[in-house]
Length: 139
Image 1 (cartoon, one colour):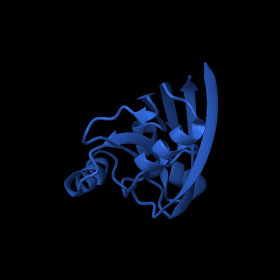
Image 2 (cartoon, rainbow, N blue to C red):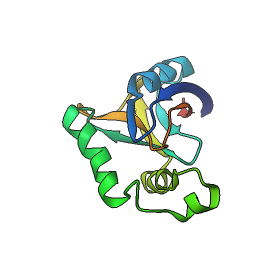
Image 3 (cartoon, rainbow, N blue to C red):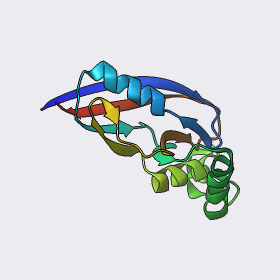
Image 4 (tube, rainbow, N blue to C red):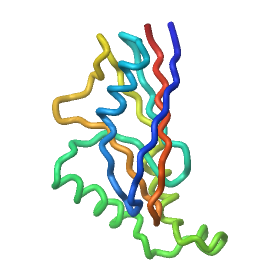
């Protein structure tokens, strides 16, 4: 069993920006040299998350609208009163979303469904350069 940790950066617009990172994770898998195992995809920080979605126009509208319904931007957050940075909603959304996602791989290929992509979702109130860590465990 081997562990390989590789990272990459993505630029986001913030404000619940959804970025498809599937091809980059697949590329990192090939770079790792491992054939079979699991990859953990992790977004450091407290205002972004990682998940899977069908990366199609309707869901790219539905997902941010869902977060706005359950965690509205303008609801007022104690975090904002503490730090005066106006992104309390982003922290709550990212906590609900989760910062990591695990995908198995076989024969150097991610075992995703036909319509399944890996996304980074940046909830922060401004554009950011995000680091994404991939940790491959396998053989």
